[in-house]
Length: 100
Image (cartoon, rainbow, N blue to C red; front, side, top):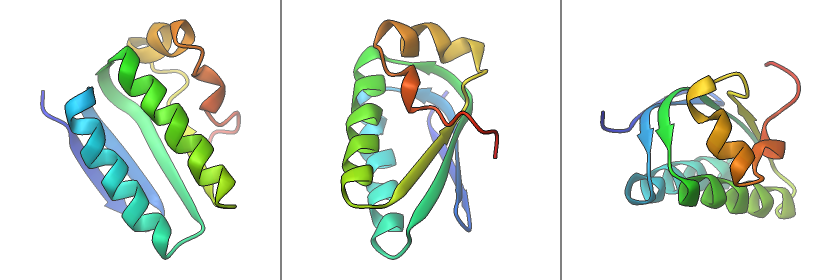
């Protein structure tokens, strides 16, 4: 399944498979949105598969956003299809603990 990004107000939902190729598109969407806004909620609830490299890229994006004094709240911690990769890559800490 190709990647689909739905965006409403400050909520962005990703659907499909997240890999190194389409991660660039997701990063561009997030960067563009956060140029004019302070907070974005990113849902990974409907991601079917995530590559190890994409999890690491998400982590780097999360850190970059925080360094710019903005908020990227990532939800999807309960998505069983990506949980093992997020844990294996030591990136599960980027998930927001509070369900938004």
